[in-house]
Length: 270
Image (cartoon, rainbow, N blue to C red; front, side, top):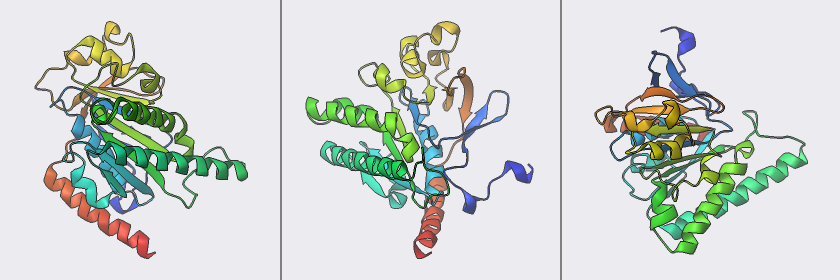
C-alpha cells in the first residue's frame, strides 16, 4: 500500500473521505460525507450496525467533529458514549430537545454565513462539524412517545436533513424497519447516500434505495442471509453498487475510543 492510500490516524478529519469497506471489484469504498447525509437500513443481523460503526469511528477520530448520538437501545452506539458530545438513550423528550437545539444551532450558523456572504462552512472555519447519528430511527419516529411527539421528531429530522448540510450538520440515520411509515419518501429522497443491507422483500429494498431499482436488478432482498455486511450503496446520481462493509470488533472499538479521547483532550488543551 502506498503512502497516498493511507491517512495518518492523528490526521483524520471529517473533510476526509470515510472508509466503509470494499466494492465487488476490490476497490475501496470511500465516501465524502461532509455536506451530505446517509441512510442505512436492512433486516436485523444484516450488518447495518457494522456500517454505522465505521462512520462513527471516523467521526470519533476527527477532532473537528462533534458527535451527537441517539440510540434507543443504548447498546449499539453505547460503545462510543465516552467520545460523544451528546448521547440520547430511549427518551423521546430528550431527543426532541436535542433536535430543537441542533435546529437552533443550524439557524445560527446560516445567519453567520449570510453575514459574511458565504454559502457553506469549510475546513478553514473555527467551528466543528456536527454529526447526528440515529440508530434505530423507528424507535423515535414510530414507537416511543405520543403520535404528536413522533410526528415532531420526523419533522425536525427532515428539516435537519434538508437544510443542515451547508451549515456543517451531517445526519446519519439507521433502521432495521425499512417501511414507508418509518422512511417516508419525502425524507428518504433527501439522503445523498443510501446503504441497503439485506431486506425481506424487494419493496423494502426500494424503500431504501428508491422506487424502481429492484426491477432493474438492484434488489437487497437477493443478498443471501449468510452475507452479513454485504449491501448495495447508492451515491448521489449514481447506480447502486454491491459492497462489503469493513468490520470492527468490540475490542477494536474500545481501542479507538481510548485513542479518540486522547486526540480530543489534546484539542481541548490547545
